[in-house]
Length: 187
Image (cartoon, rainbow, N blue to C red; front, side, top):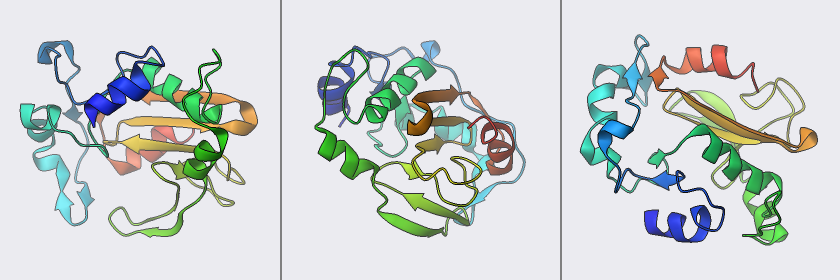
């Protein structure tokens, strides 16, 4: 998977920092993840207890985790969202996906309750979507907005109606409530 991302996405888009896993990078060149929050349970597990040890460990940094292993910077992550904002084509004119395929990946696939995090979500294939009601991707009537959050400290999104792609990447993890309080108003 990391080789695929490098060859098929990051390479053609000239985004060398967009990677899954830290393969080939010196660990001391990476920002460390810090747990700054209090008690946070996901699916019944208290994640703050060993968050730093787990997330900064070589086994996690080197793992091929498509849903959680992105090691990148904010510029590269925002540029990746520009690809989706352009329905498969970058502002530079580089096209990686046919519009119809991009549209399939941005179409709502599931609408329901995320039982791990106990919040209602609209989900596409790999992205969370805005909804007609307040959500992480806009306060109201933002069904076309899409994005994803990670590790309670990172948020990337695109708002097609505003032609805006953005990424906020931090390494201080405060938990779900702080993510909602601090990052959702930016969206």
